[in-house]
Length: 154
Image 1 (cartoon, rainbow, N blue to C red):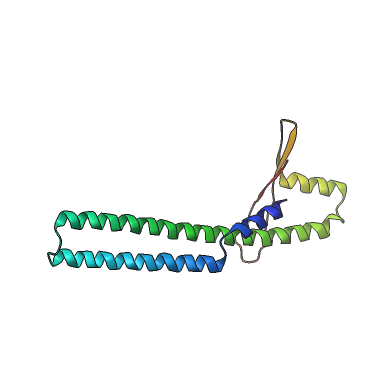
Image 2 (image 1 turned 30 degrees about the vertical axis):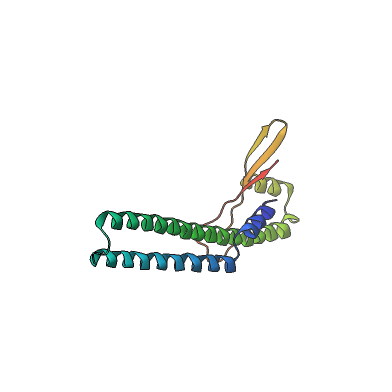
């Protein structure tokens, strides 16, 4: 179930090609905005437009610029979330493989101890049971921080 959730997150994420295309479009639009600002400033300096019109146009351009910067930040955030989901999925696979291979060799007491290690709490609500667990994940090479994933089973 947890693996399916991470796979869903990875599949729903923007593909790298689409993200690159979107990034290039936003960066191109930001360059056009900079060019517009420069032309508008030149027009004001050459006294082709008055101060009130200059300020109004510059404010419009700044709003557009902020919107594009927000889009770019959102794109970066989505790309980072996709990368984290891919790493989490790989680490989860490593954890599952390790547990699968060793689970058959554990005694009942050791299996019970493993469950106590990962189960955070059991919630019963409206006749449904939800088990919340955190999986320690020291299985990824080069990752300094151990990841913990919540599992919700209803």
